[in-house]
Image (cartoon, rainbow, N blue to C red; front, side, top):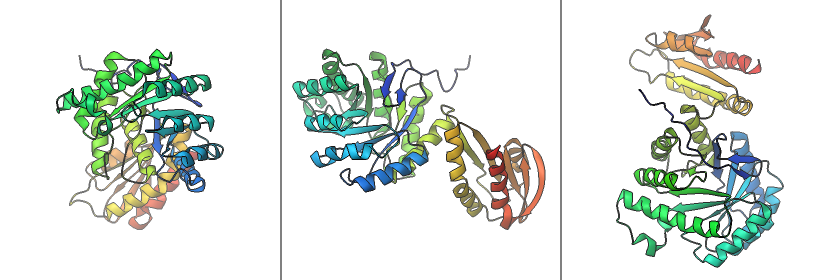
Length: 368
């Protein structure tokens, strides 16, 4: 019998992060990280507002120093989604961040190694009902631990898992179990191995991503390859696509990945042919203009949990069939296009009017 894809979600415990639930079968959460200096409250709030509009559901902020930690309360008061503080090296920053009202902490075991400090953070988090993500990166594993494993994909994965488990045991010994786990490498195969290994030994929710994926398109390809594999296997409760790019691109990519795997629904799926020598319109600019025009509608429909499929096809081979199967579509011919709505032919429009005509149909469907 053919195995279902995606496979059923891996059973994990539910962890509350502000107004969100992560794990326990809840919808997979799309998150990102600000790229402004956290102490610059105005710039950081502006970036978060843009990310909220794009569909970001959880935002993480770097907290490198006391100035950043002390700005968190002012930021939190002006945003609408849960906020996580990213802590490295100094446990006191975690204590300040919690006092400022953050909804979640990220601790890196490779950079916060003293058991007593971790216990102090755990006690404060327990008292405030704040969960902790044990976030391991391949580049910051304790060198003494790293030396215990061979430098292979599987060895690197085991080092990631053992680093995480060491921190998890400290938290568990302090009776703290509101834990989320991530095990990220810039290498896709190591990342996949690590998450599979962790899923065998703990049922904490998994924050999935390929760290330091780089610039698009390479970063998108690496992220889709690794995260798509894991999500298809049922592993993952929240995701971040880590790109050297505007964080808006991370959110859009995260949503597209989940929609492609039918793990989240809503928004506009745009189908467009690759074109070939049969195409008689200037196709690429048409599709790019259309995509830009559909962005606000996509976000609105996504927020409402409604889905529309839009097809733009360049010739008569697959064009009429794809356009007819979509909610709204256009099949191009010689300097013109045939418009479809729910399979019904509405008529022909000149090439110069194709984008506007199709957008009007989508707007009408979105308004229904």
